[in-house]
Each structure stands twice: as C-alpha cells, then as structure tokens.
Length: 415
Picture 1 (cartoon, helix red, strand yellow):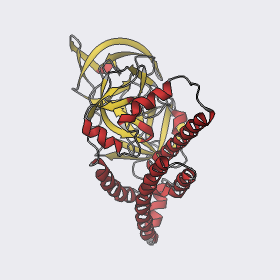
Picture 2: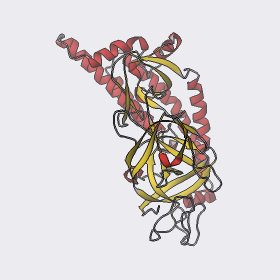
Picture 3: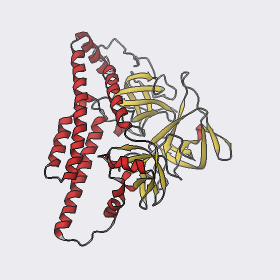
C-alpha cells in the first residue's frame, strides 16, 4: 500500500507542479463587499472565524475547489493555546514549553479561534518547545477535558483561513488577467457585478429574462456541486476514484448549456482525461504487484493487522501485556490490549492529502496523526476519550507518529 502511495505521489506532484506554474502565490487582493465571512476551512461546514469588509486587503495563499481561497488570517484574527504550555516572558510575549517525548521534540496544539463565537474545535498549527507567541488575552474555555485556562494569541505563521474568492479582486493586474483564464474562477472584472446580483433584492424584470437568470444560476450551482464531488474524490486513493461518474455528470450538465458554460465544462473534461491516464498507470502498477502471490499474502496480513495469526504481534501494535508507550497515553487497565494509542481525537486544519485528524493527550499535547482505513467513521469519536487499534509508524516528513486506524474503542483516560 505504501509503495502504491509513493508512486502515485510522484505522479500527482508532477501534475500539481505543472499547474502551479500557471499561478503566482501569494498575492494581495481587495474585498469588494461588506460583512463577508471568513472560515476555518474551505467550506460552509467550517465555523466562522471573523468578517471582512469592503476595501479590506487580504493575502491570498492558494485557490481551492468550490471557489474557496486560502488566505492569511485577516487583521484581528485570534488563536488559542493551553496556558499551561506557555511561559510568559514579559509584556505580551510568551514562549512554548513542552517536554520531549521519547527523545523527539514535543508539540503544543494551537486551536483556531473566532472573534464572532466561542468556537475553537479545529486545530491550525502545532508549536514546538521554544517557539514564541504574542498574547492578546486569557480566558477559560470548555473543552473535551473540561474547563481549561487558555491564552488568546495572534495566529502563528502558516496558520490560514478561507473565504469565497468571488468577493476578492487581485490588486495586481497580471494576476487578474491570469484568473480570467482559470475555468474554476469568476473573472476578476465580473466579480463586483456577480456579487451585487447575489446580494441585491429581486427586481421586477420580464418573465423570460428572470427565467433565464434563474436557469443559468442553477447551472452554475450544479457545476459547483460536481466540482466539490471531484475535489473530495481527489483526496482518496486512486483505487477509490470513480472518474466515469464525474465525467457523466459533467456531460449531462452540458446538454442544453450555453457556449460559456459548455466551454467551462469542456475544460473540466480535459482535466479528467489527464486524471484517467494517471489512474490507468496506477491500475497497471497494481496488476503487476498482484502477480506475486507472496506479496499478496503480505499485503493481506498488513490490512488485517495480522489478526489471522493470533500468536504474532505485528510491528507497531501492542502485545497482550503491553500498555501505551507514548507519554500522555495513559488508560484504564480494563481496556482491551493491542491498542496503538489512547487519547482524545481532534480534527485538523490541513491541505488535501495530509492527515485530517490527530490523537491528543488530555493536557493538549500532540501524540500522533491519524489516518483512517476504509469504512472507519472516525468523526463520531471527535472529542471523546478513544483507544486506537491499527498500525503505528513514525513519519519523518511529518516529524511524528502516524496511526492507520482500523478500529476505535472507548477508554477511560488517566491524567
């Protein structure tokens, strides 16, 4: 499985590198309307962190699917960190102090704050021992482990927010021209009118004109919906792709569409064609790997966690007498053995392809990243004391352990 992932990472990296040459980041952009929501992730399901107004200027770091732009936190944005993990050094300054874990540097979780609510469930960054923070306040917040004294801080570097790109116009003319040729973006010169149409109240127009406006809006909404399905699919392994279903939906939408929308759809179909070529190479690779019966047996053993061999303890798991070995992963002795970690599951703010969840100690320290096996619904365990069964390995690129979750069981954590 890891060989498959590494091979496909090379393919995707080359493809994304080619796409990246077409756009320049970061760039500065002006807001063109008032009270525009800024969120902690690229979608309306993520909570609002602040609002920006007309003429405000933000820094755009990336364009994501669905028309969401990743931006640097606007002025006035906040984050939260456990006060017990920070030593105040005078004035509004502080330094992170966390003890090493098994010889590796420990990390402190930084939660994404909101200036319009008390939401703070998503994580944006991890700080290491010795990192400095700028403190702007202090408050006791309710968390999964009860009331915790937290420091309100200026968001650290490389922590981001998201807002709808249609409300932004780049200040650089060259970038505005660049966006005009991007099939996934509303041209910059059309955005003020586009936004005004969305915000103004319905006006009296001729029936035929109103019907045409409604029809076009429905087409754009449907196009946006298919784009989101495609973006979600690209986060999965190639074996789970169903490009034919996406292609069918695009072609169905093109039926009866005007030339403008039809052109946008055709550009998306061209992208799918290149993705199909990548998928074909992946399938050929899997076929070659499958010709080795011994390799098949090893893969099956990895996927089943060696459950077919009860007398063998696979690498990264616990024997019937082992307890969790990571600091902070203490649990009640009545819990079933062979746990690979124990703590509280929390969601992460991350880019596509990176771990989406983390296992955190009761005091807020980072224990391990979590990746879910197929069929595992880890979201229902968010914020709950959880025991993790799976394959645990150290990832040098992430600088932390990664657990491939095969099962989650309730545990009683010991402080």
